Amino acid sequence: MSDMASTACFVIVSKNDIPIYDAEVGSAPKKEDQAYQHQFILHAALDVVQDLAWATSAMFLKSVDRFNDLVVSVYVTAGHTRFMLLHDSRSEDGIKSFFQEVHELYIKIFLNPLYLPGSRITSSHFNTKVRALARKYL
Amino acid sequence: MPPLTTPKSGDALFASVERVQNAELFTLTYGAIVRQLLTDLEEVEEVNKQLDQMGYNIGTRLVDEFLAKSNVSNCADFKETADTIAKLGFKMFLGVTATVTNWDAEGTTCSFVLEDNPLVDFVELPDTCQGLQYCNVLSGVIRGALEMVSMKTEVTWVRDMLRGDDAYEMRVKLTKQVPEEYPYKDDD
Image (cartoon, rainbow over all chains, first blue to last red; front, side, top):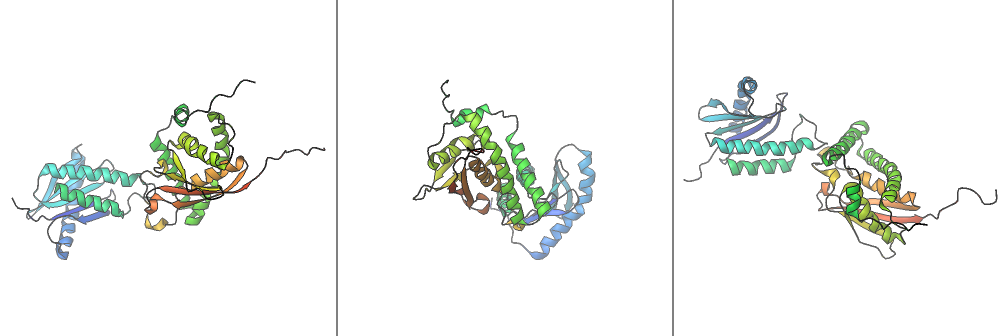
């Protein structure tokens, strides 16, 4: 099977509904207008996430919303920070592992005393690692 | 007079100190101190100075505990002092050993190289604090400790892993060896 070009947009939203990190991690060539559309879809899915998050005690909420052929999957941390991934239907296990590894990286950022919780994640190290994980699992 | 007990090795010292506290708690506490100083003082240079001063105060008290617990005999010269600090002192209080390198011709300046440093786990310097010497408290500790045993020193940081180098290196320079003075005059 040839390597299909995949679109994927990953956003981390803090508990105050402010995006603190976003990245286009798909392997398809990036197009400006598509990036805006992806972010809009993820933003619209936040309401659905709100309800679902309190309905279950699991962290991984699987797919919460659909738009054409794109699916939104969400993972909620204990601090109510949401990791949202917009993608064309891929393996769920891979996405779950991706979220778990990003969660570990996220905890390390949080342990940095010089990081203000709720502010944008600007660490280039984090950025590189997230993209590497995306290539590995998505 | 009973003979002095043999000086304990670094590992024995490390084990003997009551290790009630978790290492991560220590790291996080130090991080909180630095963060609070940054919020209060806002100037990176001021924070560096405060950390050095805090280290100095810690060092003046720490040297007494070190000498009491470790039973080392008097060091013959600065070289031996530096070795003792690197092998026993750092190991006893931080759990890591430093290596002593780069002695200059007169034997008054040397470098302590730390491969890993428990104070800086998880820390990444953001762009707003680029001039921050995060481990400045360590240089203050060494300066304070040596001053209590009558050696005046100057300590500077040469390499810092938070800035992208591969290890932590501080340069310790002995400026003056003050001979011990009696607090009372003889002819009173």
